Image (cartoon, rainbow, N blue to C red; front, top):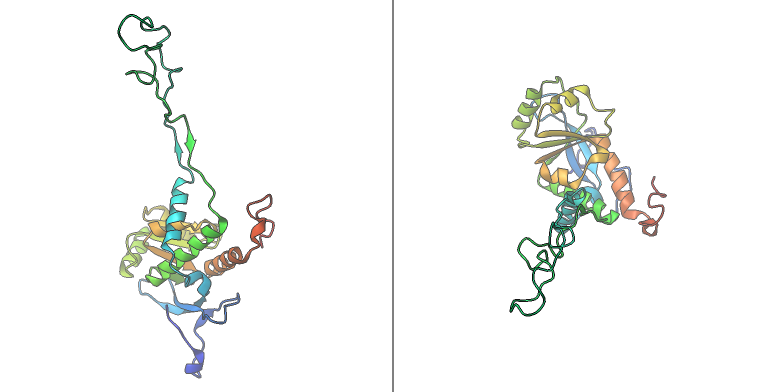
Length: 263
């Protein structure tokens, strides 16, 4: 993150390409980051962008990251383990021996849970869902913490657009290697429809490069990938939605109309 003060350099044009449209608290200042371009291997900086401090400079709550990551991993988890009870195990219909006189312990069925080959008591019973509801504000806070951590570790890069000069996947891998982006990169654009064709074709042939829309950005994907690349429209979208979640009227959730106040 960098900071530029236009008053300190009179006569120099303001390089800030995007300013925070939402109100910034009086005791804080916007965080600034370089805006790069993907049109060449060189890390060409085309300007600066303001980032809202409540989204990109929040407290690094690692416990929130853990809660959201575990929730995402269990969101679709279903256990199909199932054991048979004594009523479902084959056999064991008659009493193995008479109740008294044999000197052995009394039993009524050889499929009792205490018998070898018998039924299972209190075992797993069929498909079990591990889904649970995580509060919406915790999920939104997890996104803000993940964005803050990525920016502070210099793993978040802002680009003017995802336009590539070619659809060759080799160009994208060489660009990531030249800029030291690591082995896995997550590229985020505003919508699916507005994504350039070259970036779509290049990422479709690479296993470690993923392309998602802004609405699909999540904590687990950000932690899974080493580098996060955002476009300028994506940043505006994330700031708008995440700050709205932080200031929304909470009694509306999780009741009948949780999104009736959605902007």
